[in-house]
Image (cartoon, rainbow, N blue to C red):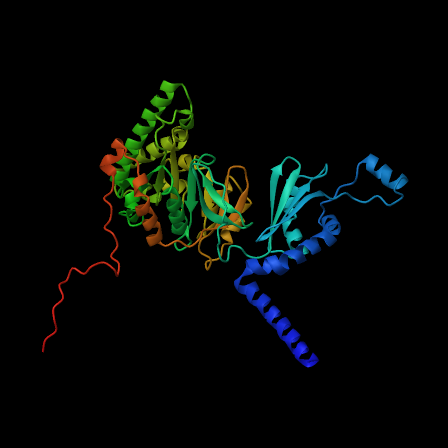
Length: 447
């Protein structure tokens, strides 16, 4: 009987070890919750003070504290590390809130993030300033960008769309109230189109109007026609559409002046125009011309786009510009337009200059991260903002058919705008499925 018990115990132990090994490779959240999190908490608790000391994140105590340590506690005066306020485990990592002592700033902790990562054996450490004097260390126990799983609960506003997953396990939300205009850069096969599909998929569910400018004959945006209020597929159509949008912008400013307010959201609900998001698929196509006679039309289109970027935020018209490269070499007005695009997302690029165009003027430290994105990880990007902060993100895989299906499902939300009616695209035919009836009359087979 004792031999049978020993065999069962050994078999159970082997099965448990094998299950944990399987979970580590195929269910990292489960492995982290069962094994990784307890180990990380123990390592952090035991080595916190020494790790902070060797990483240069301690300061000399105040005179009063040093006096009390020497004369009352009768012990040696030691450097003071940041005070741990809260330790919270998550399904992807460990979050620690720290109160910084006088003499330390969040930049000091951020500079030591790689050393902290190796000291505590976690995959990454991100530093977020939650309020003055308090930072949060967001540690991830494994590579959450390897298999993207968006959080179940995401806080988003009326003009916010969860688009991707950050490296710290939180959702990257494209909030047009905070960053009204955005720029997305990336080489071919970098995941730039995937990012746009996720963005359109989220916007299609909101009560907004979508305006598409796809000068590649509409090959990218035509499938979203049921949800688009307007679509321009050539440079000539884009120029005419931009003129209409500028006129719409001026009419909305007249409405704001009539009610004595300075922002669209201050208008009463019954008179407030619907917000518009203008999606430009390839910005370079608006700048390129084939002959000298096309130059005035090109300059006018660019000027109208710059005007929208400068003034349209207050009246609820937002720009989402996409391209492979965006610099002064495109032509007149390119730099002025780029300066208005505050939200930046840079995927894998072919040269360092493109990364500098997208991130160099707002988050210089992010340029190296953008140029280090591997080619075998499409969808990985670096998102920056005007505050100088940046983070790695990755969009979940979304097929064109899935995004088009969402646009058809929410086609009833497409607003009726008389000014954009001439540019309203025709909805494509419904895709044929296996359950659809055959249009060919069957004929019996005879000898």
